[in-house]
Amino acid sequence: MASSTSLTPSHFASTRVHPRAISSQLPSKLSSSRISFPLKNGSLKLRYAPPLTLKALSAREPKAAVVTKDTWEKSILNSDTPVLVEFYASWCGPCRMVHRIIDEIAGEYAGRLSCFVLNTDDDLPIAEDYEIKAVPVVLLFKNGEKRESVVGTMPKDFYIAAIERVLKS
Image (cartoon, one colour):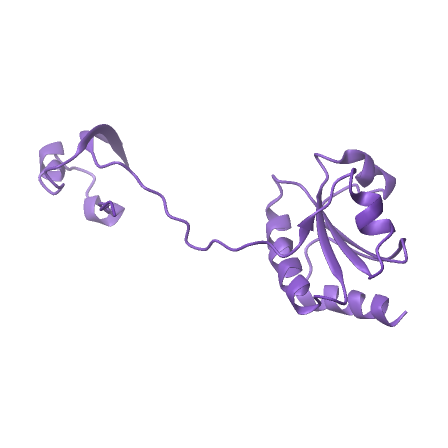
């Protein structure tokens, strides 16, 4: 397993730091890559810096499946169970918050509700068919018909209430 070196900005918090003072704090085995530290009066560049490695803090498998225009009819309109579809865009920050909620709901309602996500940038015709003008939007379908909608980022209880209404209908 490869070792990694961690440098924290607080370690170099002073605005007047000589490069040799910083380089003396670094391990002796370094690659030839460059690293820079932003400072108030410009930036400080080091000639030798450790290779940067990124690690995922939380890697989770999404529970809501992706639906596209090619799978829309089979997955949504012809489904035997009620269906929840989140319309989102990859650049949309609030959509990421809704993703987490929808994934929780997908786990809690497994077997009683199918959950899907649709990227409106990739499948614009479907979004236009349902008059999606902004994202995120969550639509609930039963027997191929739209029954409920939740527009915008809402607390989980809003989604649960809409789901319960559809399940009881």
